[in-house]
Structures are given as structure tokens and as C-alpha cells.
Length: 206
Image (cartoon, rainbow, N blue to C red):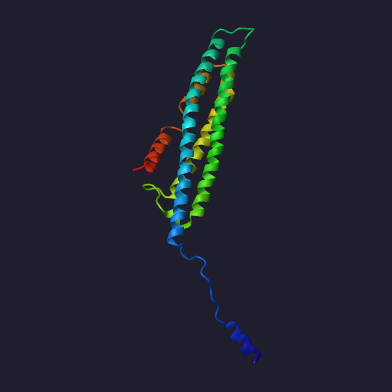
């Protein structure tokens, strides 16, 4: 008798509630609108950071050439009183250090943008497969930002090395090498510029 009761209990039908039921059309549209708005904001931040990077890069080129010129004069005509560090070079070095800090800030900002993009993909759920502009899904924006962040990080390290060493060069060839490393970047290069052109085309309003 006892075994029959246990058997009946174990065979009692259990109703499972499906917690993954589809969203209502209204709620789904609201979710899509929120995702699109957040993505638009992040794309603007990405573009603004790149504009800052380009401006800082150009300003840094002028400063590197200024430091190179002043340092070259010291190497060509040594002055025992001035040595290899003329006072007029200090201002250019300070400005270059300030410029270099901009790249560090951009790297930090890009880390945060990437974090928010990844969060957006998770929060979007099925909407992550939606194409909000022309051809890119949300994951494409994440992949774009991952590569950009990697390139920003590596190029920022090069900029820091130039800033820290260019004023201490004792050979003309080293001066030229540091100025060239700044002016012609290996990581944030023409390829990155091309990708940003593709991004601009992707999000361009039709």
C-alpha cells in the first residue's frame, strides 16, 4: 500500500511554466528602440575618441620636430653651460607629455565603451541579431571595438616611449627614429582610418 502511494506521488503531473515566452510586440519594439539609442550614443563616443586621437597625433608631430631641432643644435654645437637640455626645450617636452596623456585617456575610455557594448549585446537578447543600420549586427560593433582597443593600447605605448626618450637622445639617428615612430604609427594607421570610413558609411543616415 505504501509503495502504491509513493508511485502515485511520483507520477503526479507537474506543470512547467515557460519563462522564455516571446515578448509582446510593444515591448519588443521598445527594447529595439532602447538598443538603437544606446548604440548610437556609443558610436558617437567611438568617433569622438578617434577625432581626439588624430588631433593629438598631429600636435605631437610638431612637438617632436621641435624637440628634434633643439636637441640637434645641442649635439652639433655643445654648450658646457646649457648641456644637452636647453631651457627652451623643456616647454615642448611638457606639452608632449600632456599630449601623450590624451592617448592614455582614450585607451581608458575605449575599455569602458567595449564593456558597455558587451553589456548591450547581453541585454539585447534576441535583438542582438538585429541589423540596426545597414549590415552590422551588435557583435560586429563589439569586434570592431576589440581590435580598435588593441591597436590603441599598442600605439599608446609607442607614444609614451617616444615622449620619455626623445629628449635624452645623444645621437642624431635616435632623434630621427623617435620622431619617425611618432609620425608614422604602426598600429593606429591607414587601416584604422579605412575602418572608420566603413563605420561612418555603416551608420550614415539614408
